[in-house]
Image (cartoon, rainbow, N blue to C red; front, side, top):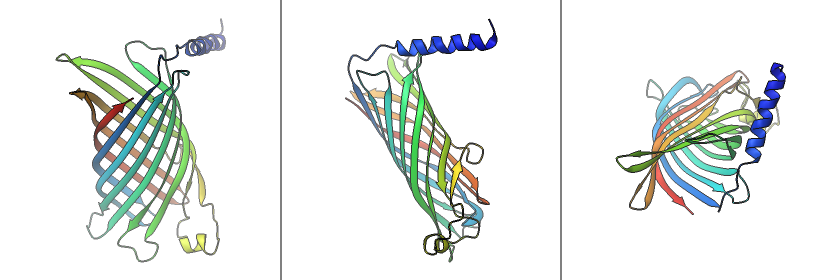
Length: 259
């Protein structure tokens, strides 16, 4: 059998296995409310050639829904992300804020001893960045949307006769669009004079390689379930002769409700 035929047989077997997944006995909703705090590193060469470092704070609401008539898990994330950062000379500050939305469609894979799901993801974000040092063009609009792929893994382990559930999720954007001015172009030119100059650009891993991932542990204390872990949010883009990145490393802690 040729290599191509073997691959076709393998893909067909995986597809049949996925289609034969049993439906759930009852629907389940899991909602996590999380607070994240950590470090931020921001670069936006439209506002300044300097990197700014400081603090990142996030509020996250993650809702995962499993229906009884479908093997798919639909997960929705809403987030508010705020950063305050300073340059190396400590004579300029960035104030940043962003609202995030993400929706995942996750399908379980036929693996044993752990829960593994994977599927498409759609995300959108809007916010802004303000530089206290600048007189002209002190602010930058941040807006974009993309589609990508998400993967989740979970496993329950027992330590000293107590159960802990370890979860990991990663989201990789693959194709999207984002707003960005040209180098030296003012917002007055764009929005007042209507001088459009490729201000909506296509984003791919080649010019905007980004990653969002989270490693957490769920544990129960007196019938209340808590979550604690790490969240990394790395966003970057190079377009229109401008560079941008927003890196955040955060400790997250929160509360889980299952219905």
